[in-house]
Amino acid sequence: MPALRAAFWRGGVCNALIVHKADLPKDRAAWQPIFAAAMGSPDLYGRQLNGMGGGISSLSKICIVSPSARQDADVDFEFVQVVIKDGQLDLASNCGNMTAAIGPFSIDNGLLKKPIIEPASSPGPTSCTVRIFNTNTRKVIHSTFSVSGDPLKFHPGGTYEMAGVAGAASRICLSFISPGGTQTDDTLPTGSGTTVLDTRNEQGLRIQATLIDLANPGVHIDGRALGLDSSTTPLDLDKLHHKMALLEKIRREGAEKMRLDPDIASVPKIVIVLPPTAEAASKGIHIQCLVLSMGQTHKAIPLTLALNLGAACKIEGTIPFMLANGVDAKKDVTIQHPSGTIKVGVELNGKEVESAVLYSTARLLMLGEVNIEA
Image (tube, rainbow, N blue to C red):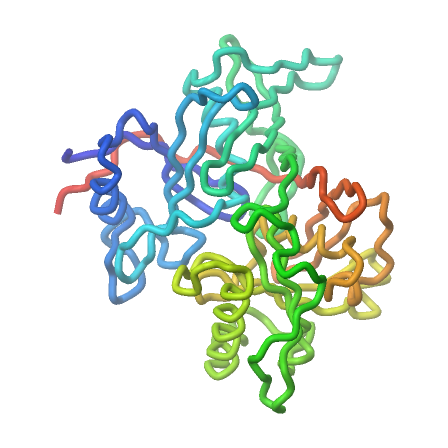
């Protein structure tokens, strides 16, 4: 296979190649060298100059899409994180950002047998809902977005602005159905909103964490316990090697307590939470955060972790619940991350999350073939 048919999309604050599963070898063991070559890994320099990757985890991604045989889904979506330095494939989690591109890709490529179309109410646009089954987390996501033309295609133009993305585009609504228990079968795998870890901070105090598995597993910790505050930037944190090593230790212990493999770098992710400053609270911010993904501090926030944090802010007993300011059980949670803010809607039934909703954008960047020969 000298080349692979692919579409290059931006989804949220990430980029990825999207490929048809039918174009891949049936032997999944053959996928690794294909995807690694497409991304430009392995690369000990960490830049992926020899491929389509961008040298950071949010730009080293592959999405695999196919029609679904399920009654509750239109398409199946499998997410692959390509590890930059060694080219190995990590399939343990979903990418919420790239999920935004899956519905538009599916209708543009004729993968929908009976798309769910909502006729335009003048002067509003026609909308389409695609039911996506993410095979990594075994969860269904409903993606609703604007379409136009004959045949109908994704309509990318619009006025919605997403923090971390330049310009405006049409808004994509992502509704994650029953998102709890993606890897552990429980929203709170330890049965408690707060778990005391054996890992100690620099003052010798044991770290407290909220371990929550919703949309993706996350380990939430109070940033103040690590000497961090709202002025800490991703660049600042990445340079604090001793704190990054401590955070990895926390992540690994959190994984063990969630009955996950600590050697899988993509899950759980670390969410450093902070109460909003007085200025942020006056602007309607409920909580502030930094997120670590694949050993790097994210410059915005993975959408699955925004859902995870938004839900945690409404679940009594969790660290985010205790740190959040002014959260209303019936309203969206507003999260501040390094690139701006994001709103998350959470529907609770007791402590069970029935659905979690957020908004994103996507754009087709390029169609063609990726050279995978040396």
